[in-house]
Amino acid sequence: MDLVNRPRRLRQTPALRRLTRETRLHPAEFVAPLFIEAGRGLRTPLASLPGQFRWSADTVVEEGKRLEKLGVGGVILFGIPARKDARGASGWDPDGPVPQALAALKVACPNLVLMADVCLCEYTDHGHCGILHTTARGAIDVDNDATLPLLAQEAVCYARAGADVVAPSAMMDGQVAAIRAGLDAAGLRDTPILAYSAKSASAFYGPFRDAAGSTPGKGDRKGYQMDPANPREAVREALLDVEEGADAVMVKPAGPNLDWIRDIAEAVDVPVAAYQVSGEYASLHAAAERGWLDLDRATYETLLGIRRAGATWILTYFAGYAAEAIASGRWDRV
Ligand code: PBG
Image 1 (spheres, rainbow, N blue to C red):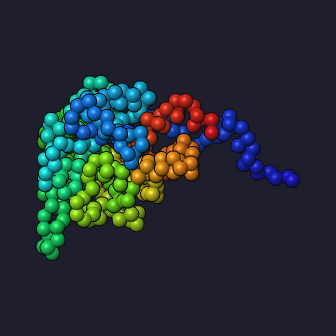
Image 2: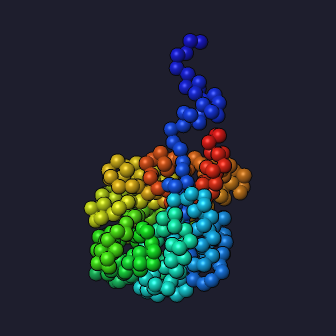
Image 3: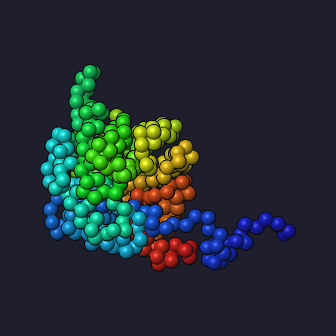
């Protein structure tokens, strides 16, 4: 047959495929989420996140050094405090687990970008991302405007402790503006804000909430996290955050919202991060454990998809794993 067009010609050998490849992954674009708990000498495995741990501020240094050596771009820290209360006051305790870990990593890992998640759900006894009040309708709800100064205070605390980037994830309206103003007033004009702009009320946060003990006691997060059905609203959220001073914006979860990543990357001119969340990581591991899919190849594909959609940075529990796979060259020879 005289077929002129034969796309298979360029697929014949690993070398041809490697040369033809349109998307390549690099360790520098990955950010590893790390859970930090109060205490010393701890490295507690997380049952629903295989290969992930809860670290204390001293032990996390070894993990930071490992990731830095692998060329991973950064880490994002989540705190598990010794005490929780209605206002989440442990969130801005300068002696809390996250500030302590930031201080230790700052010295030990100068080439890692240190990010700190700014939210109250890990610190409140009710597990919501802000403080509660009773609305005019008599419902219990998160009080948006009363939460803003607390988030600003938390961001200032982490920036002072050594965070290179603060990342508000509470989904309160105006949180970026409030944090920018708080940082500026504290003389922290150069601390960038990575805004969790388009974060949906997702079933994929389950393992994270187990790890952080942050499942809301009553109710859900649908009054502040986004409806996953709304791509246009996702763009609006990102545009608002850029207007408020966000230096980078984020989509979360990544896999179910690839269209949001693409739409937002086209609409804004700041870096777009995407968070491959705990449930995405856990479901790949669970299927692989049953022998239903190949973990290595499936991981590679999900990360490629997120990059193709337009993400500049990928927050993923696979950060160290992916950096190792890249260093070994095995994702080059596919
Ligand atoms: C804090 C926060 C959550 C995650 C990141 N920041 C939990 C939530 O919103 O319930 C989830 C990350 C993951 O699942 O890996 N609000």
